Image (cartoon, rainbow, N blue to C red):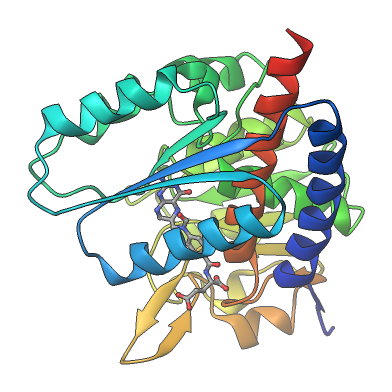
Length: 284
Ligand SMILES: Nc1nc2c(c(=O)[nH]1)N[C@@H](CN(C=O)c1ccc(C(=O)N[C@@H](CCC(=O)O)C(=O)O)cc1)CN2
């Protein structure tokens, strides 16, 4: 079997196209959706992602407020900036790029963002809403995974989903989203016994563990859908996912590549969250 390659770049472009149309409608009603992105420090990858967010925002006609702060920024100063952004009427979504420098408590910062502007969906209020099946802001990467499954017309009802990884950013929320779509969900982690056997029974494998090619191709059930959330740098330039791609693609019915799979969806869904926030505000 040769798997269908799920093209995240193409799907993200379609999502952005639809967002652009809705932004134009909102602007005609006098509302310009606005996103504030806060970067602390000089992490090169974070700088690239923040640049992409800003570029996309402007291309879609959104208001973009960027705050690039030095590595030495104190937690108190960062919290004060978030307070200002919470009160800024032009801003409908706030995102603090992770990781933050080690002297700053990330949880404290994420909890300081108003739940009404939490474009990342990381605030405990929004996590709770997702857990009870009433999501408002949904975390961008898992939200992107759901859109990719929709785009290939995959119905999760009654399917066995195995999520490898239990992070708050991807593993746990994506499991909740699959559960909300009536899948039977197993979350695996570093202490799962016989991971290979658990993965072998999955109709859908979602790998989000951050370890290069840890999920082996021969663990994939023939015909399964493989969603690879990992982006691991190997050597100077090469990027690989959490799944052994070539071997998995021989067994899967559909698979996301790395790069060009889930990654591009993350930023598209951030813009989607900002748009939805502005639409909610207009309705209120
Ligand atoms: N506050 C947040 N911080 C971080 C998040 C997040 O969702 N919210 N996610 C990641 C970084 N990230 C967005 O912020 C992100 C990661 C990867 C991509 C992407 O398009 N990757 C490309 C490869 C790019 C490359 O060459 O490095 C791909 O997979 O094709 C976009 C956004 C951590 N921080």
